Structure formats: C-alpha cells, structure tokens
Length: 84
Image (tube, rainbow, N blue to C red; front, side, top):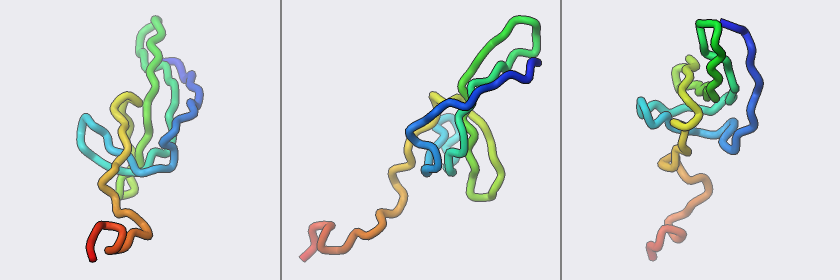
C-alpha cells in the first residue's frame, strides 16, 4: 500500500461525534484522505479518526460520522426547559 495521505478540513473536528456504523461515540481527531489500496491501483477514501472514551482511536469512513447531539447541554437551567 502506498503511504499517501492528506488531511481534510471537517466541521466536526474536536467535537463529540458518533460512528453510525457501530454506534460508538468519541471525539473526532482527524479526517484524512488516504490511499487504502493494497494493489497497484489507487483507491482513495476519506477516513475519520475518532478517539473513544477509553482513549483508543478507531477509524471509519467520514460519511459515517454524525454529531452526538445527546451530550449534556452546558449552562441550561430548569427555567430554560419550560419549568416554572
């Protein structure tokens, strides 16, 4: 495999995300356009590298990354939730 790659900007970098394929959540550390072929024919994919709560990183296709919206809302108060 050729060791060719390039970093790709992504709107969710350094944010909490979910891999829709596995359901695993973590922080999006990088998106890299990589040649993933192990033959002479190049095959490029955008891979997202996510650091899970355990500290271990895993990768998935960048198309499988979505924001993890169910994280705690910082600074919300009971009054903001519609309670009296």
